[in-house]
Structures are given as C-alpha cells and as structure tokens.
Image 1 (spheres, rainbow over the protein chains, first blue to last red):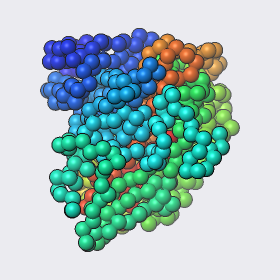
Image 2: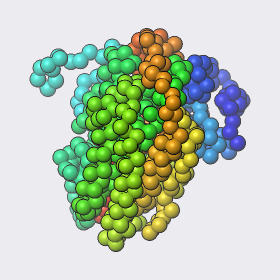
Image 3: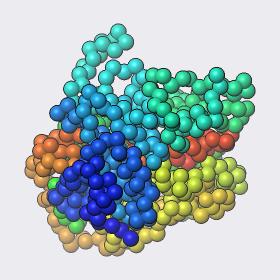
Length: 168
Length: 402
C-alpha cells in the first residue's frame, strides 16, 4: 500500500520525536510537491538509524536510494539530500541533513543502500562532506591530490596545478 | 600484513566498518603471491571510452575489480551554476552523447515541472517520437558494440546502417546529427520536418527486418549464447539495493520502467510491454538477459513509433515555441525529476534560489550508478568474461564522468 508523505512523516515523528525537523513543501506543480518536498533531519547522528527504519519497516520499505546529492547553501552550511523510493509500495520520500562547513561530517548510509557508495564518494570529492563510516572514501572524479572541493561556492580555481599555469 | 576476510568485506562496501578509516590512510591492497594486477584501459576499445579498470587476477580469474573514473570529467555541474536554465541544454546533450535527445527531454521536463509549465500536445508527440527514435539508435549502438566485444563483427555494421536512418531524420528536423539542443524548456527549437513521417514509416518496416537479422546473427548464435549465458549474474535484490536501473535492472527480472511506473509526457496513452529478463539460456540477470532486454525494448520502441504515427494530430498547427517561457526564473525550492533514458533512470536534482541560473544542478546518471555494480557482478569470472560483463552494462563515459 502506498503511503502519502504526510503519513510517512508522522510515522517518523512518532519513532524519532525531536530528532526530526521541519517539513518543506514545493508547490509549483503536483510533481514538484511529490519530488521536491523534503524533511529536515535535525540531529545528524540519527541519520543512519532513520534510513534503516525507512528501509526495513514493512509499510515503508524504501529499498532504492534514487539519488544522494549535496548542496552548498552559501551560508557556511552544506546539505546532503536523500531521495528514496519504494519499488514495492511505490512511494517516494526525501530527507535532508545540514551541517556546518567547519564540521562537515555526516554518517554514511553505504551499509543501508550500496548505491550510496559512489554518491558519497562524489559528495566528498565535490563538496567536501566527510561521510563517516564509508568503507572507501576516496575522490572519484578528480585527481587524488586535487586542492579543495570545487562545487563549494567559495572555491577558487588555483593559479597553478603541479607547477603548471592553469590557463583560464 | 595480509588483508583479512573481514577487511575485504568492509572494503567492498557490504557492511559498515567498525571504525572510520580516513581516506588518506587506506592502505594499498596487499597481494597474495599468486595474484597479479592487470590494468584495463583507459585507452582500450573494450572499455567503451576512457575508463580504467584495476583488476586483481588469480590466474585468469577476476578476484576484484576497481573502476577508476574521471578521465572525461568536464565539470558539468559547476558549469551549470554559471548558466541560465536554457543555456544548460547543450551541456546536457554532451553527457550521454548516444542519447542526447533523451537527456534533453529529461532536463526540459525537470525545469518545466519546477515552473509548472504545460506544453502543447503536439510538442509532446514530437518529443516522444524523437525520444523513442533515439532510444532505438542508442540500443543499436549498444547491441552492435556488444557484438564487437564478444567477437561478432557483422551485426555491428547492420546496426550502424540503421542508426544512420535515424540520424538523417534528426538532421532533417533540427540540422544536427549527434548533439541536438532540440528539446527546449516549454517547447522545441524547430517544428518537425514533414518528410520525417514518410522516412519513419519506411524506417519501421526496414528496421523490423534488421531486428530479426540481428537476432539471427547474434542473439541466438551458439557462440554468443555460450559467451553470455550464466555470466555476470546480478540478483534482483542486489540490483535494487545497488540502484541499478534501465536494462540492467529489468535484465534481473524486475519489472520497472519509469515510462510505465512514473509516467510522463504521453506515455500513459501508449501501449507497450515492459521487457524483463527471464533467464532464457541461463540464470536470470546474466549478460544474455541484459542483451535480450535491449533487443525486446528495441521492438517495443518500434511498436510505440507505429502507434504515434497512427494517432498523430496532423490537424494541430500549434507553434512549437508557443509555450516557451520568455524568462525562466523558478521560485526558490528544489526538485528531483526523473525520466527513462535508454540506460536507465536519468534524474536531475535542481535547486533554485530565485535566480535565472540553477543554484545547483546535480545529475543522477544511470550509467554511473550501473557501473558501480560492476565489481559485484564481475568477481569470480574470467578476464574474457569481464569484457562481456562490462559491455552488457552499456556505459557511456560522457555520462559517467559528466
């Protein structure tokens, strides 16, 4: 049985109480409401437990993590968004965690969904969020010795790379 | 110190490790005396682009396989932040260069859903017609090059001959053959060329013959079956948990197609089967099943084309640019929008902060996620099988690296 997002949210609130934050809704179209709304997770440490809960409860069964994406909010905070769906119950849901730039550590969910493995490596590579507990947190697209995390808003392209002038 | 079994399990990402290992402190793999490392790529024809595989071999058996990406990274996501919404479309073309029309469609839908724009019915028809033609073109390349990977040269030539017809139709309509910038937010760059209908009818007839020919030459060839059946088996639960999509997921017997399960455009009005692998010559989810799903989808796409031509609203003379917004500036918010690409679920996660350019544009590339399952399905097979397995995943490096 498919559940609507309000019901899923209530379900999480009863299970985790204060660790859950606000619900953000996108209203421009029906599709945007379904796929653009998300629930804030207030306490980052509970993220993995919440994900396990969402994956394993019989009426939720979020067995597929569609996308793990990272955003630099521009106010010294970074966010990671988890879009998930259930192939059995056919509902979708999204979680968002926000951490400060100085302490950018988020628990890894690779043990919950294996597809998170490369997404998290990309998140570390591009945004510099350290996914704590990831089995192999190396850079994935850039060189191992690349300076900085390019998708942060304050990233400046270095003038020199390995002693070579960067031409632009 | 040799790697223990538990360490190997942890490194392969199957369970949570007991303690955190910082990235710079992961030790290089310790080899046993009988093991060796083989580098496949980045300049190797069977990797379908610039992909490097670090393969640990025990004799001829693959013990582990570590893909190294990034040779074709072109900073799409960083570029997109500096562009206005319509300016991103040519960049989207260059991600999956074998299915540029489908990528355009996905991106245009994402922005339209964000804005809440409805496009004219005629535009939807043209979009779906071209998306399905592109799907066939992409599967023709996938099937043809897969034949090359396992040693069949002839089907490749027939496939590319037919792909040429499709590219001619695209060229007639929008002037480009590979990267189109054709599907815009809210509309199209040009109206469909009237010659395309006749060409499409002829193409469907000829292509059905090619489909049969490729089946005879390749799919049911004894050598091909021996090379692909029971090789690279992906279990359905592993496939779903690992995020596989497209023919890779359906090859494992999971009936999941976004055109049916999360319908968009005019797909709900069309009648088509979702092809799944059944383990025709071996176990469900082997390389043969993935190839077979592509063959079946190719046929289904031809059926869709026939239906479209039958239902075509010829009397509708709407301007294809009538719904194109003059100024694209979505309200602050975010959206995850997904469509079915020939390789699987192509998703766009777009964050808007009330500006004329996307604040963040992240792509869920199907080939990227499918490739991340390569180590899982290649362990325990031979080196020659690894090439067959990689070919059956059907990656496009432009999309993997973005």
